[in-house]
Image 1 (cartoon, rainbow, N blue to C red):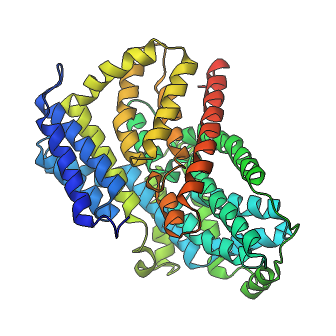
Image 2 (cartoon, rainbow, N blue to C red):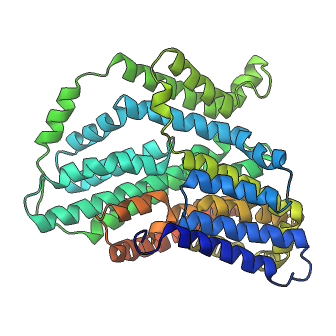
Image 3 (cartoon, one colour):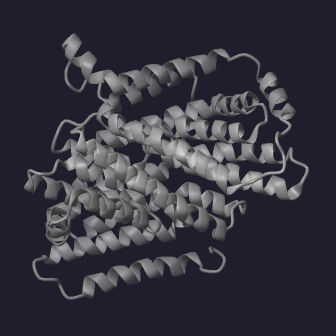
Length: 467
C-alpha cells in the first residue's frame, strides 16, 4: 500500500476530507464551532487510519488542529498529555519494557510450548494465554511482535510445507486475537479503555478495579470461544510437533535471574495496588490520591530505574503511538463536548437508543463499534461516542452510563477484519503470513461471534442487576 500510494497523497486525502466537512452547510442546531469539531473528528479518524505520518506525530497533529480551529486554548488542549490516565499508560508501557528486556516474555512463551508437549491444541492455547495475559498490562501490538517469532520457530519444526504454513497462520491469528481480547480486561489494555475510563471518571468514582470487574469476565468468556473457533477452522495431518528446540532454549535460560524475579515482584505488587489502592487508602487513612494507579505505576518504574534494572535506553523505544493516540482522543472528546457537537450528535442518536429495548441497543452499539474500529482508530471511536452515551444515560434515569459505555468500548476489541483495525492486525498483514482474504474471512466471522457473545453477556448482567 505504501509503495502504491505515497505518503504525501495520503495526507492530501486527510486534508481534503477535513476541508469538505468545513465547507459543508452547517446543520440546523449545530454551531460553527461544532462543525469545526466534526471536521477535527474527520481529520483524526482519517489520519489515524491512513497514517501518512507515524502515530505519535499524528496524535500531536490532532491536538495542534484542535487549537488551530479555536476549539480550545493550547494549554487546555495539551493538558490531555498529562492526565492521570496518560501517566498510568506510560507507567504500564515502561513496566512491559522491563519484562521484555529481561527475557521474561520469551521465557513464558517457551514454557508454554514445553508444557504443551507439542500437541497443536495445547500449543495454540499456551501462546494465546501468554498473549492475553501480557496484553492486560502491555501494549497489544508489542505483545504480538514478541510472540510471532516464537510461532515462526514452532512452525519451522514441521517438515511438510503446507502443514507448516497452516500452523503458522493459525498461531499468528491466535496471538493477534488473544492480544486484543486480553486488552479488553483492564484499563491499561487498550487505548479505547483508557479514553472511556477517563470520561467515566468525570461523572462518577471509577477505579482500575471497576473496569476489571466487567472486563475480566468478558475475557474469560470470549477467550475459549476464540480458541475453539480457530481449532475448528484448521485441520492438520500431524498429531504432535517436535519441541526439542524450545526445550533446549528454555534449558539454556536456566533458573530465573535476580533481575527477572525483581521485575516480577514489582509487577505483582503494582497490580495488587492498582486493584486495591482505594482499600489501602481508606484503611490506612491516606490521602485519596496517594495510591492512584498513575502514581503507583510511576513509583514502580522509578524503583526499577533506581535499582538499574531498567535504563532510559531500554524504555525510550516504547509504543509512544498509544500514548499520543489516547491524548489526542481525550482532546478530541473534550473539543466535541465544549463545541456542542456532542450534544448535537446526542440529539440524533438518543431517540434510537431510548426507543429500543436494551438488547437492540446493545446490538447497535457493539456492532457499530466493531465496524468503526476496522476503519477508525479505537481511541477515536471511544472519544467521540463515549461522551454521547454518557449524555444519553445522564438524561435518562432508565440507563446507567456503564450500561452503554462498556459494551461499545469493549466492542472495539473485535476489529479483526482489516489491517487498518489495529496495530497488531497491520503487523500480521505486513508480515505476509496471513493473506488479506484470510484475515477478512476469519476476522469477520469471529467478530460476529464475539460481538453476539458480548451482547448476551451484558444483557444477562443487566437482567440480574449486576450492571
